[in-house]
Length: 219
Ligand SMILES: Nc1nc2c(ncn2[C@@H]2O[C@H](COP(=O)(O)OP(=O)(O)O[C@H]3O[C@H](CO)[C@@H](O)[C@H](O)[C@@H]3O)[C@@H](O)[C@H]2O)c(=O)[nH]1
Ligand SMILES: [Mg+2]
Image 1 (cartoon, rainbow, N blue to C red):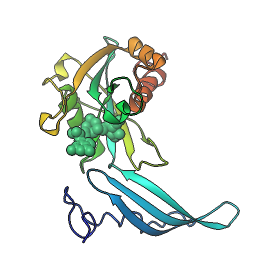
Image 2 (cartoon, rainbow, N blue to C red):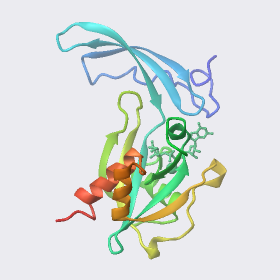
Image 3 (cartoon, helix red, strand yellow):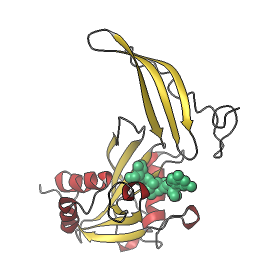
Image 4 (cartoon, rainbow, N blue to C red):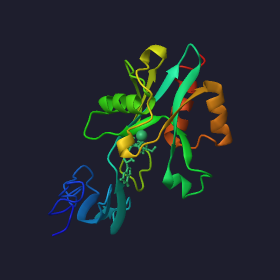
């Protein structure tokens, strides 16, 4: 009996070794085996598959995948005041890998929790920043780290202003979240990308999109 496979793990999941076994979309890939390495919070698997190379020969490959589900993020912007609303929170994985204090400036974001991406991002924006936004604009949906992490991240943008503020934000305290809401002048935010002080991929992508194609683009 293995938690996460035949009996529930601590988050109630079973069958975690089934992912990918039924894939048929790519005739050059035949999944042979899926081994669950960890399901303590998110899920780590190693998958063995036959892979047909471009020259026709087959080889056996093994790849670890880290599965934390899918996520969504939103750039909150105020065109009239030329500002954006970001969050600052402690990120241990960044801290342990060279970030000076692990306090990252990021666009509001979160995991989907079985919701549709648009519903999830409205909930996360409200929880993290205290703003209940109206229409959200879909920007793009991308794989953030396709060699190892399964996650697809859905990107959105939405206007905010004094009228959309309904609470203080800060995240869900019971989940251990401790999030500071940070309003920045848009040009200052772009400067922080240049200096490396904004070092979170989704945030860099949304700020550059806003300058190139979004609300602050020169047209
Ligand atoms: N106990 C426990 N809790 C965890 C663990 N990992 C995460 N959590 C909790 O799970 C929740 C995740 O918060 P969300 O707001 O849903 O996700 P996020 O971490 O902000 O993720 C967003 O940013 C990521 C980094 O850029 C993105 O990868 C992700 O797609 C999303 O946009 C938080 O309450 C966090 O404390 C863990 O190992 N153990
Ligand atoms: Mg979050």
